[in-house]
Image (tube, rainbow, N blue to C red; front, side, top):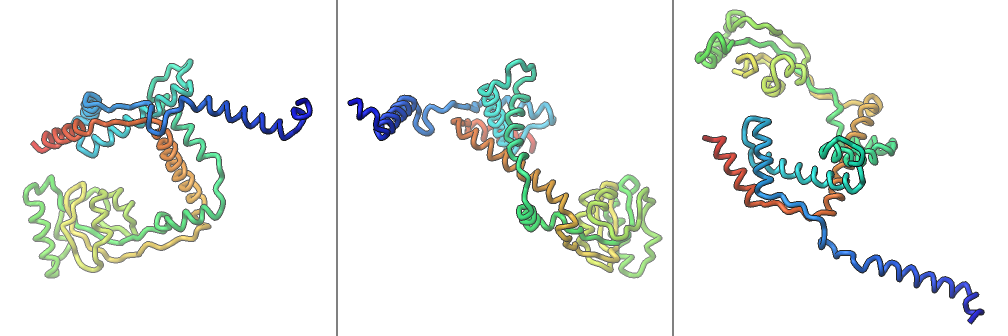
Length: 292
């Protein structure tokens, strides 16, 4: 017996049996997948409370998409809050629930921030998002402005009458109203145009044909007739010229992706139950109220 106990093989057998026994003891009360998970219940009362909070902030009821977003945000915050409590982040800290949830989120984001991307990863990201870094297209144009304050109900009719006259060779200087901004733009991209005359105006003008008066085109000020005199298409840019911007965007993209993955892993630890009937009813009531 003593000789047997001195054998290394016997030591390994005994150690293996001990490890197996400890693991079996630890696993005896472990629940099966999806059984015994902590539950997060989004009840009808919670949904109503979320809708009331939204209405107080925005002075209107949320629509169906917004209601779904409120529920998703509530579940997300509840998960992060519970994880914060489990990690003890609430101890000796006077900042309440939302701040605690943010702490867990920041931990997930820090994981993505530690690794430095290699050149191949940056170039691959640039290849997938080349349009983001290309020099934007631009247009040169001039416009005739019609003031909605001056013309009121005749605004559109006045603009269309002027457009017809221009098509017959009319003098552009005889139409329109005084304008506080520029009347002529040279090689202006959509961002610059939007800054002067609004995004809705810019979206239309950037795609107008060259060489003929077009309109009416609405802006934040009134309406306009527009003559595009030239256009430059968007041009690609070399990776080396925008490498720093690519690196920043890559890091932000990875942070957002990592944060979402982190939340999904945490979410798998819970059994989420949403009162779908109450959610649909609340969204329906909200839509009917908005259309009255």
